Image (cartoon, rainbow, N blue to C red; front, top):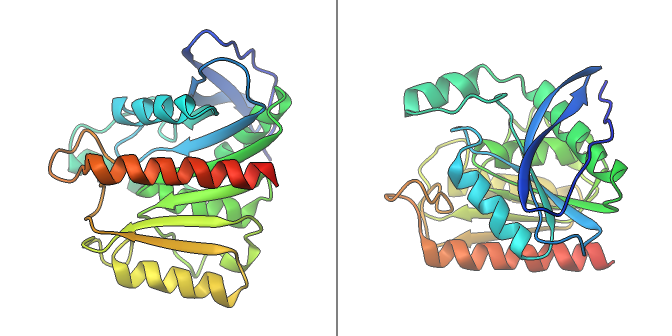
Length: 238
């Protein structure tokens, strides 16, 4: 069970706050908003590294597009400093509980007057984005980036909102975000009648990650973010 509690959200830039999960006030997140003009919000889900500066910076960029943005901390303050530690943190994550955190965070935003909420995430966060929308109808739109959950455990047919999925045609993460896996996701969604669009960028894995100079593609990242923001605006307007 998830239970969102009222949290004071101000328009004074960014800050961290907590929300209640299973009766405990232990959910954590980074909040970003540029003014309080919008009644709409975006949930942002981290990569396997954790809620690091790159994710917070991305939240700020989305906030600059006119949304309130809540980047949920899946690791409760832990941030990986190596691929080994990132793998350990992701491997120890209970995906079911993580989806519960996401839903609780979303309900917290709605309790504060944010009427419509979209969701996006990167790598592990992309997979969690898909898992969340397959288990909840709280979202008006979703934009997962290069991450697919185990489709034997996540029923794509349960998705109710439109989806814009971003993947790279040079991604080599077999079974998780490579082109073959992305197209399998696309086919499953279309077979289920989901409003699903796949954008296959000329890039590898993690092309949105500013902290990874070997993978980050600033031009594509800028285009993908603008495309996602416009996709969210159109979904919210309906």
